[in-house]
Amino acid sequence: MSTLAHTMMTAARSADSGLASPGELDRYPYAEAPAVDRVGAPAWDGADPELGRVGRRAAGSRGRGLHGQLVQQLGQMIVSGDLGADRPLVPEEIGQRFEVSRTVVRESLRVLEAKGLVSARPNVGTRVRPVSDWNLLDPDIIEWRAFGPQRDDQRRELSELRWTIEPLAARLAAGHGREDVQQRLTDMVEIMGHAMAQGDALTFSRADSEFHSLLIQVASNRMLEHLSGIVSAALQVSGGPVTGCERPNETSLAHHGRICEALATGDGPAAEAAMRQLLTLHPEVERVVPAPREH
Image (cartoon, rainbow, N blue to C red; front, top):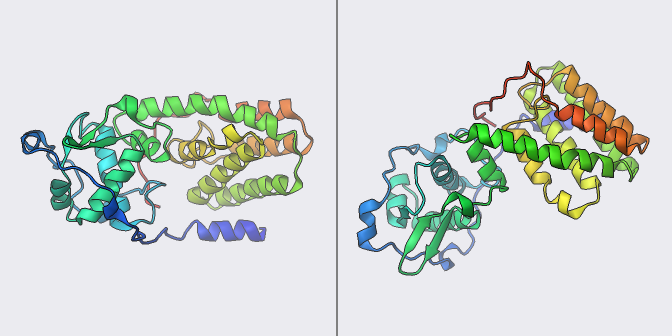
């Protein structure tokens, strides 16, 4: 096994950790909802009473302590429909329900506003926004949708998006012939092979995600490159029909290897064809999204 493969497989078993940076959170003003709105304020019965028990931390929230966990909780509740559109979110009530400080609540609402999930207006307060305003390409929202009531739609939409992005990226990447990138992609296939032999689905998943993200980046199309995070999120929450980390197998590994071979010879059409084969749905693969996993 190469040094890179050993390092990555070891790192995959380490838990993610980190603390929230202090920042100047109080500079972000959130108007309080008028008293009359509090009659329609949401009940928090559907939320996890212990924030530390969040099963899967979103990519944008990972390693950010209570702030990240509150973003995850509120985001999941909004995306699942537990907090419907135009519902008021009163900072004091959120803080009391989740036993977090006002500063944590404000910063969490700021993050959710950046994702298009809520809006804050003077004399109106903070309210949930309709689905049409959400940033559906945000990796966190992709994850929340994938593990909520919209899981089937999310998986279908992600698969369709990958079919649009990745074959083109593979064709473009074949024209660059960078040896360092070729070696890195080959290393990822090697790591996937070792992980599959050891039954290590987590390492397989991470190497798979690295492979696809790197392939998009080497296509040298800046607009495609901006979509690499979406592909990574898609792989993490739903996988491709044969590339998902829940189902590492020889067929998946062979298709990745063929892509590497096509890139090494600069054969764009072959790289594109191999990617399409990799993304092809097979009848024996169940079209379901796996349950959230502990990372």
